[in-house]
Length: 376
Image (cartoon, rainbow, N blue to C red; front, top):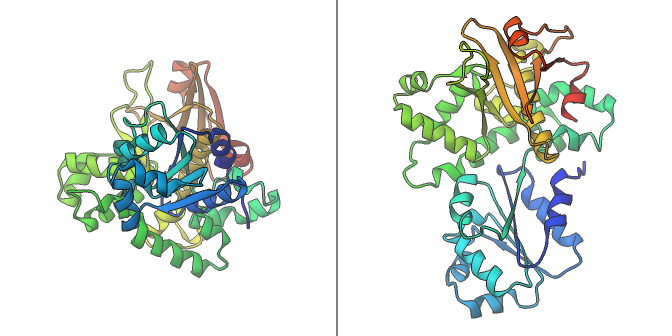
């Protein structure tokens, strides 16, 4: 199934000489495929460079203008895939942009940590940043009708929406792909960083997070369980967010002293990755975590929708010390929208403390009957 990516038109609209478009996101979400599609549709001569190849690194690291002129001669568009693998790529791109301003440049990468460190300062005022995710339902819905979407709902909760997973036929093949993805690619960028040696500890941390979807996470407790310091746990979680495995959601507080704000909840960008980490692909009727999968799915899809539509909304959870809670809050321009997630069809009630503290906030239950209005 050929799916048009929402980010495609934005990247094309920002392509201009003397600027760098930076596309970043998790490995295997379709960045390379998308960039090749864009390049082939531009009707210009382009040069494709793989930043992980030693010969590409060698010539770019020379920072020699004559080398660059020879390399890029006759091309109008240059694409550097996996740019984070190239040392000093920020300085390299700055030289190219400044000295060869006729070129349009796209750089892609799978580590926000590496890309930000290497590209951020040198390319201030010279770069446009674009984030790409596993397939969003608002993208998939352009290719499947609503009956197909409803039919595939349970499958998306279990296997997620990586492009290859969507196109594979058979649950066994989807499961095998996700396990291979986790084992071979998921932590590749983290483990390449200096000082990160213990892959098993990171996997153990991910497993603990996977079993705490929708719950506040105590860094001290995680550290005790894993035999690691709180600071190390915090560092690993930050890195897992920067390689687009996890997403951190913080607590919202404004009017009540008893609101919880100092803890966070962690969600996975993709349900299939979460289930691969705990090696559980059972059908929903055989699981005891359907509510958690539903919450993770809706949050991830809403985040993707908001990002692609440039909604500029902040997302939180809300909970008080006496256990009143709301799964998801969105704020923008002082307005608050509250959402409760329920896999069943029943309609939830707004918590009394929240209604009193924020009488102007809207409240809605998101269930199987109306969820597409929330994510598409």
